[in-house]
Image: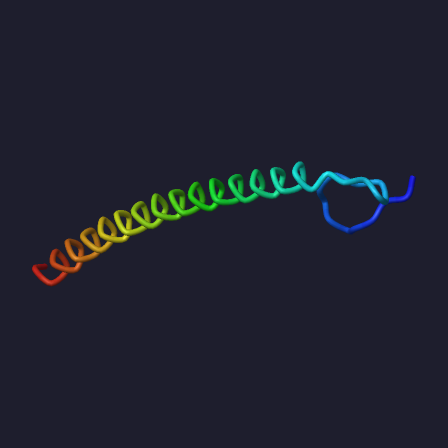
Length: 72
């Protein structure tokens, strides 16, 4: 079967016209990528908040220990 293109999308036979299907597939791919990007951004924000919270907690502990050392 003769095919063309290196795209990872559906292969076409030479001369086959599926322009409507290809456009729909492209839009579906774009929607999926946008959804993934939004999910990754949400995960990034969650990790950033967790890291900030842990940093603040550790900084508080360090300050308390330093204060106790200075008081001694």
